[in-house]
Length: 189
Image 1: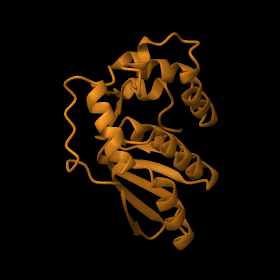
Image 2 (image 1 turned 135 degrees about the horizontal axis):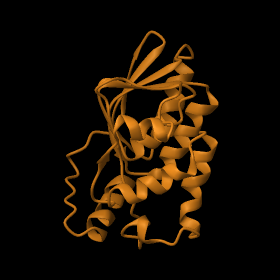
Image 3 (image 1 turned 180 degrees about the vertical axis):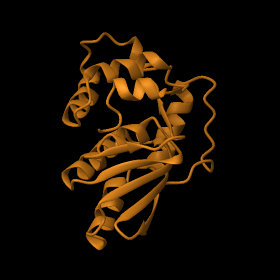
Image 4 (image 1 turned 135 degrees about the vertical axis):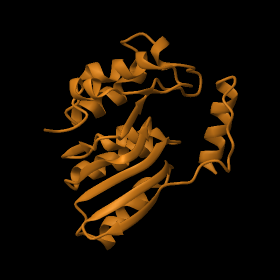
């Protein structure tokens, strides 16, 4: 229910943003040995789903992300990402994977992060109720703090946040080059 309301609000805020409520599939996990494959859109129940999965499969050490197009609840996404970090899990974007927006934020929670050759990493500015594009907010605006704090916790330079805002509008996507990924420490050595 919350996701549909959020998407309806976003469609209203962002002219030209077409939202088809049947056009996305919520995150699903598939366990194989010590890894779990992740696909879909991150929804409000991500933390509960992830905690249940980890309780049932404590042997999991790695989350392999294939197609994770983003999130419809950034607060829940960052909460789940912090759980990934607290559990000491690694993240991988598979070579045929495409991870974007909130999916990229989730990926950054991995203790060890790997972007396989051929994988796509997408970033853009964000929008929220009353904010059409975060890039238009002054740098000292309090709305930036949640993301800046999160990136700091994950060992990602503050410059990455400002890069995401400037790279593409909230209704567009920038696919990071390998050079940009290296500059902003998207993968770990």
